Image 1 (cartoon, rainbow, N blue to C red):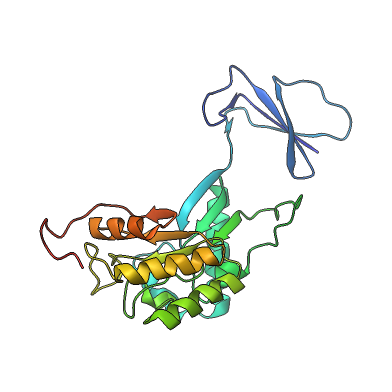
Image 2 (tube, rainbow, N blue to C red):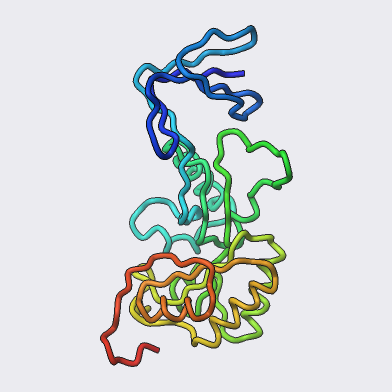
Length: 250
């Protein structure tokens, strides 16, 4: 049992009026007391005289299989499974050190990140020293499309259906579709869509039928409009870039 004593607390909306003691029992916060009250036997005290406690942060878009170097994503295909594990573990440790307790990974390769998630059951406790992971697996993209090197290329409806089924088998938390090109993939266009409208709708319906939500990578306005029309549940990277009013967006 651990008692963390600090001069300030931020609860996500307001700061505390004075010092607080956060009580942690069996890896769970069991109470928050104003000031520094006396505690019974069995408590270990950790005091930080110039610190603020706050709820764990959430990183809603990460690529854990890539390090933080220049052109990191492009180097991922050359990694062995062991190297992918090492890069992912390092990234998770750095996330935790920065106060991030949940990471939403939307750019996996070979389901490396998805496969390392902990089984989540009612009442289960988090593994110490590693954030909770929400994972999509490799994002779905066109052949040669944005982030094709992560292994999620789909060329036709049969491949799309098979890819959704594979993600369902891996129990991903969400399916990601690259509806536009991206800056990190030469030859793709951030202002234009990659799939037809009907293909995006098909993938969204397949995912929803499997009980999976869908998020769309959508830099440009045409991709945003396409994703909304298809009924996606979320969108990432919105910059609302437009190739020119009146142009053929698709």
